[in-house]
Length: 169
View (cartoon, rainbow, N blue to C red):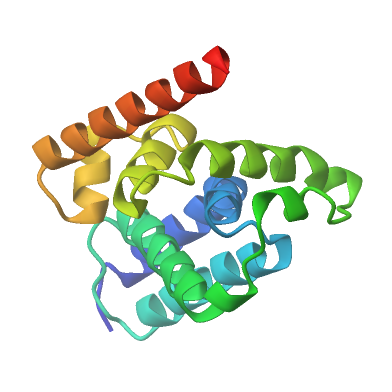
């Protein structure tokens, strides 16, 4: 067993205590389903715990968990794409009172980002909603920081053009 393992397990426990709600919102904003977002976060945390308990090395645990949740959301969307419904139909789906605010936020963000390429939309979510720096996004996405910045810039330009166009109509 790795000597750093108990330390990493403590670090995981601390991450769960401090960031579990943030990780849930991170997943929810990407997939729009409360139960599935909760399942994704729980499965990622459980897998990380098992990996650490088995003595496997994990560098930068926080980044590893965020990247794992992001990848799990992408996998979920790939597998469940036929079940995705239109934004205007989603507004009529009943939610519990606790979900109403986050669901409305999901709808607003989805509407703004629906015409943008997926890789640009994800950068905007990470920067604006998840409050990650360009460097952190670059590390998570495993792309150069300059690419992150250019995708962000193009996405914001596209959103601004769309908002101006809607305003003039």
